[in-house]
Image (tube, rainbow, N blue to C red; front, side, top):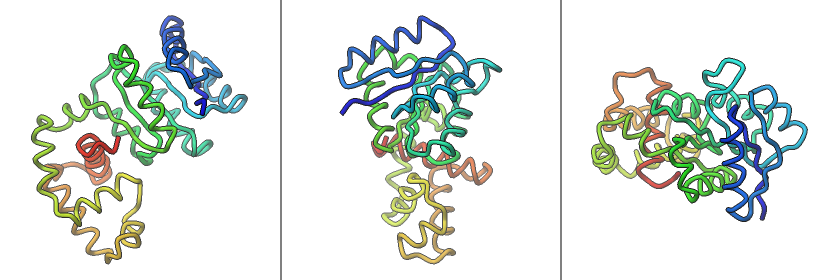
Length: 222
């Protein structure tokens, strides 16, 4: 099955490079190219793709347009996958990208684009509704991947199941229903996950997303 892709980047050479890379990949068709956020949103409405590959910074503000596009598209095109490319090793961007849910979202450093298989795998994964987070971003979030892996092994089976449900974007009520747990038990397990992953001093929303980031990186869910 051919995956229809929309590309957005304010640099012509980058857009051309991405287009050629995808064309060499086989089952990928670039249906639109855009150089800023407004034209990207307009192009998606005009020629809907399966996946958007967008730079994180574009006009009009050149700050976080890629993340903003992902948030807007979650509302207007909920089944559309988004791959955000960034040259910035800042976990805050990945956290913002996943705050509305991890399904169909990927955050990759631009250096991965030179390795064709990484980008193509991310596109396929978000098209299926999965998630991909660049391992380097998680390394910057926690003190070394080995620590994160060790922390994951400390989770009980029930805590792991709760974290997996969080990674699917489920609310506490949804987790309670799916796992047949009381609301109080869900809160207890989530707090235990935060503690074991060393996420005890952040705001709840950030702790939740950070826990999902670690889960995706360490379990291969992305």
